[in-house]
Image (cartoon, rainbow, N blue to C red; front, side, top):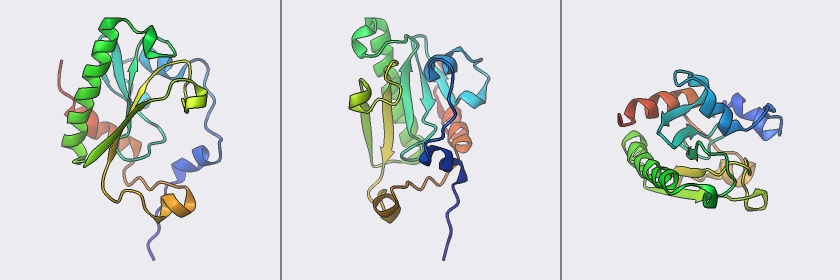
Length: 163
């Protein structure tokens, strides 16, 4: 029998994720560009790309505007344009890095819609493969992620196109 060890997920599964002061995304945006602990893989002028700390699949990332607003209605046309352009670039980088067969892309606006950070709008981009749901997801409500977030960060950051 093979064993899968993912001890870093236990904190999340038990609901004991560290509490942070302020907005998760605003804190990451304010950190130095060279700080890998934020898992920001790319910064644009109006938005940035950050990895999801508790991904559904390898490569699960988020496109986040620098503007702290709860909905896309609060974004300027320039920010919204870059937000979508970075989403498009994210697909290209993820295809190159992982060769996914599809994607889930979504924006959850407000806590009732599932927004984990309801005050700061962001778009999730999740690579998908045929058969990526298995007995672990079905029976144990657990996802098996075969790559650490640090490995994902290094892989995607190295593939991001230069401005």
